[in-house]
Image (cartoon, rainbow, N blue to C red):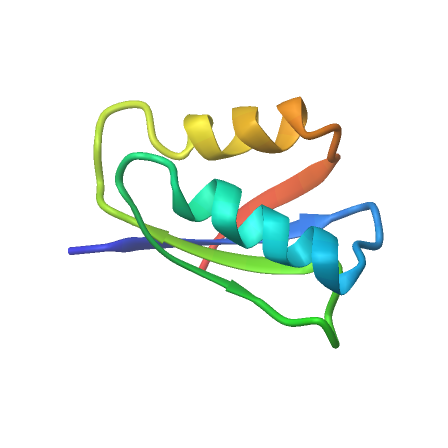
Length: 74
């Protein structure tokens, strides 16, 4: 069973930044899918395997990237 979270990022990201975000978050352990859309530069969907501590590594990575985000379950 996978879990999905919706992330709204306060900053407006360029298509290049969205691609970097896709690659960075997609490279995290237990993340199975990341969906970004250049028409919605504030929104991100992340699917991950349920593991202890998740989704905190996702949130921590966003913070390290200097992003401010609100996270909700889908």
